[in-house]
Image (cartoon, rainbow, N blue to C red):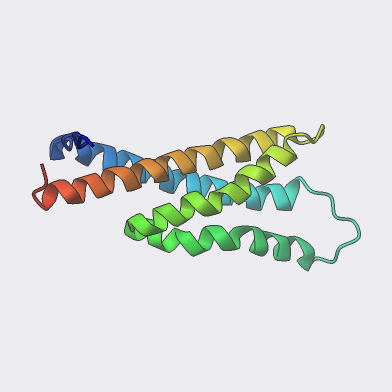
Length: 140
């Protein structure tokens, strides 16, 4: 069986700006998604039967997965970016389901867009980061 020829790794000067941009996009989309969830639950959901802590409890539950990965993403951990790609699927599904609402469909569209943006940027950051480290280690 013939051996597959591996593609050469990109140059470091090609990878460096892509790492910075993908990390910045992932952090901005994470913060925007967290802000969207807070604003959505405070101002756009009518809860006449719940006490005052109802919104705070829902916001806390909604932000917990984001806060779990936030510190690792701020520190630039590749493994945390991978976990963000997995956890962000919760928000993607919620955004798609919420987009069927006739009243606040735009909130669902926004959540879906931000979750896709976070997924793609975190995935690309992880991919380029591993290539960057392989290149630094001397791999051709």
